[in-house]
Image (cartoon, rainbow, N blue to C red; front, side):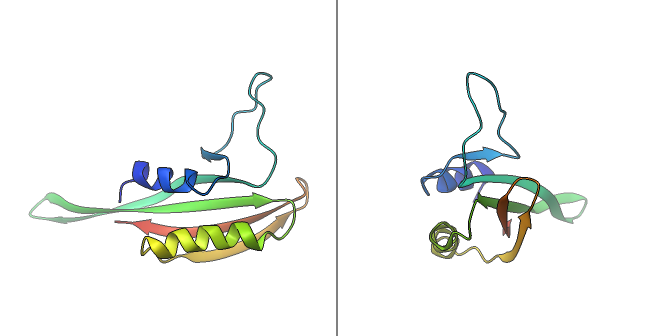
Length: 109
């Protein structure tokens, strides 16, 4: 699955989605939580005979919400499971923003 294909799957969840972050302008303010940001945090290439054969991309999906949002987390987990994408999960509360950040780390092949 490509990053573009994956982005479409995130949009299908029904939450605002942006790569890396939302640009907050007067005409287009950043959305209120819950929302999703995703970004490529690493990639790796398998090569043979000095030619790249296969690339994998590590992507973090960050779900932001003002409370522990089991419904939104469940939607993300269901989408990942349906697309046979395993994940690592981390959660933290960002006190300065008053939001929970749930990070799902996946590898796209």
